[in-house]
Image 1 (spheres, rainbow, N blue to C red):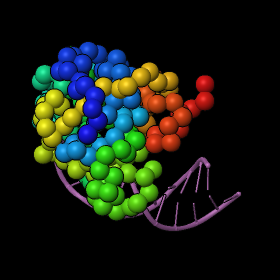
Image 2 (image 1 turned 120 degrees about the vertical axis):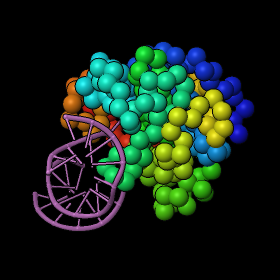
Image 3 (image 1 turned 180 degrees about the vertical axis):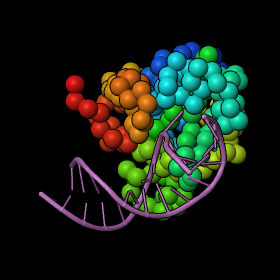
Image 4 (image 1 turned 120 degrees about the horizontal axis):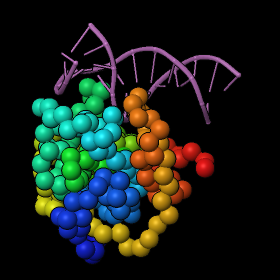
Length: 190
DNA sequence: CGATAGATCGGCT
DNA sequence: GCCGATCTATCGC
């Protein structure tokens, strides 16, 4: 386990853009398995791509209307899970990629590959590697099985358009650790 | 390398 | 009915 400080609950009680950027370089573990967050995306209620656009509450997105600092997990394309952190004012941050650090053997077994680059580089892969499913939906990020540890230093952050969307495709709400080999995709040049 | 197809199903209109 | 905050395999250059 990293001997670093846990992120406090109020870390998440800010707008999603701020939290998405601040999360780069922090360490996430679930049941002791995880690594360094290298890629995130932000979604808020003004964003047509958000599940909670215009604060429309549905059965699926209910957790986004609760307190910040909780996990919002949903199924996508009928077969993958995506992990989000709920932030202030009905917003959320999608966790898109980790640099694997802890429990890599377990991640390899769950993912069915030895290739480190393919363990947590993408929101669906990351959930499979960490054992995330709807069982974690609504759980607090400040208590087991979750653990989040503060970043050690500053890092150069890349910013660009988000991945896989058909709405609001030009918003610059994807954040990444610059030049990390564990990004789900490269960031566009300038 | 980029483009494309297929898998697969819950949530929402 | 339609479609998606994805992934993998496969095809073409």
